[in-house]
Image (tube, rainbow, N blue to C red):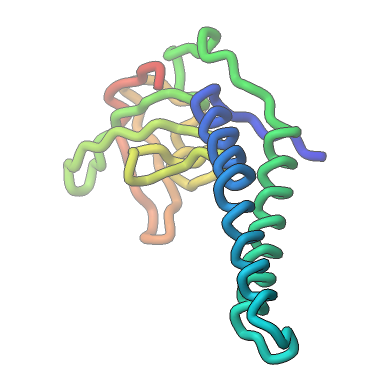
Length: 157
């Protein structure tokens, strides 16, 4: 089983999602199956088929979350340095071509959320920034082509 690194916040979110699926979604699906079964002939009961399919997808999601949680290792955020870019750093960069400034927090793959400014450590930008210091210019090969960024600030995410 592969180890999955995550923050305490990410772990807590996964635990809350699992609890919701087990305590809210699962009883709803069971209720829908019982109601559909009570309507009679199961061979032509689309409601029953849909409820059973929903149950299968729900159980698969629950199993996936349990596996992820079982392999999780919480990252000790107190040991994070800002000397150079690393996991869980909040990095402010400037695109040298268009002068646009943006801040990203580099997180594990399971916690990436672009709307929150959290990018996965496996993205081209994060990979290009890792190990570099404030003031350095880095080149990143992105799908849009070669991009150059200046690292303006490194903080604890």
